[in-house]
Amino acid sequence: MLFHSIDFAIFLPIVFILYWFVTNKNLRLQNLLTVTASYIFYGWWDWRFLSLIIFSTIVDYLVGRNLKNEESQIRRKILLWTSILVNLGFLGFFKYYNFFLDNFVSAFSLFGTEIKANSLNIILPVGISFYTFQTLSYTIDVYKRKLEPTNDFIAFSAFVSFFPQLVAGPIERATNLLPQFYSKRTFDHSKAVDGMRQILWGLFKKIVIADNCAEYANLIFNNSTDYSGSTLVLGAIFFTFQIYGDFSGYSDIAIGTSRLFGVNLMRNFAFPYFSRDIAEFWRRWHISLSTWFRDYLYIPLGGSHGGTLMKIRNTFIIFIVSGFWHGANWTFIVWGALNAIYFLPLLLTNNNRNNLETVAQGKLLPNIKELSLMLLTFGLTVFAWIFFRAENISHAFSYIAGILSTSLFEIPKFEGMPTVLTTIILIAIFVLVEWFGREGKYAIESLGFSWQKPLRWLLYIGILLIIFYAGNFNDNTFIYFQF
Image (cartoon, rainbow, N blue to C red; front, side, top):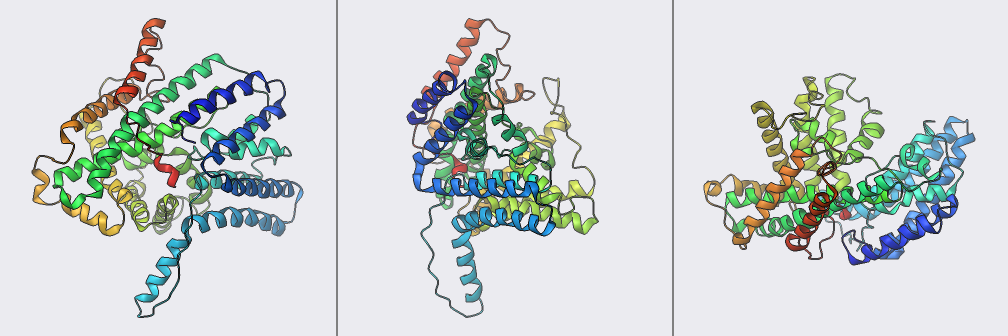
């Protein structure tokens, strides 16, 4: 079920009414409704894959229960690895089986040995990368005794399957989300209003920015050999705003929807395109994933406390694994490695934590140095996104070669160019609103908050009208559903 679909527009009010007016006096019943609604939400796409979520939920619940009183370190490790192998086993089969099979066959063909192996027609379950990591965080934290295992199976099921963030995050930690299902939630009008504002801005990002940019990004990337270098640059920039508007828009809608139900999710984006270096970018982009890898992979490997070689090794591991998490394609691995290369000079010179505060905090405009660093970081990010978007490595390099040709200095031209100006103007407006709202949790968190009520409502109606008249209402799914 898509957030910007008619189905969800009907589903959400029904669940909201049942949640606050029918089950609100019984916590267990309210949690059961949450689980049921979440399974309906997920099963709307393909009910067969509900079995994966349910099985993963049962396994990790039982592992947690058994870890509670188990003192033998050997048995504790067996329990932990049971959870890891079950969850990563599902993820590996559905997401990476054909990738490893094809590369295995290709590797032998290099030595003149032909192996016949048929790929499987595997459908990737939506959100499997997200809920797999979410439930793993529970098992790992229980194993490390950072979290008390739950005895409440319904609350645990709600944690694993909570529908607003089930299929594309944020990837929640059990230490944050699970305890919220233990205590009675009370309706908070101010939180609900704030949630609605964030949903509105998320829909604007998705329908107006991401989906309009997608039209041109897809056209240019899918026919890259037909266009000039300047047009290819424009295509990469369109994709840059497409993926940000699409993914951060989903997170905004998920976080806003959760607040309607009295649940607080972690922030997932913090205006990453205003970053002054790549380290800052990764503190602001897909925060729930980057902190997950930091806490459960990077730090256990030794983090940045070892020697130079260990720092280099750990940096490449975390970025390459992060790239591979996104998909079974060498393009994602190269994208991850490229970001590691960007990041390493900052780490090795101890400059990776220079920019912890919001850029130009308390000021209207950045200074020349801040602007230059933002533009440089943005340019490096755009370049890396080419690998992320390309169909394969060959396509990525041919795309870059096209950019570096003499046609880079031509005026961009492609089909639909007369209407692209509208999208560029919308992007400019979007960037301005994000800039002026960069010190909030989302861009319009405080916009118009001190205005008189009629003016505030005019603002919201204005955004709705822009969504209605300038939005792209083709059947565009969210990019991260495929991850």
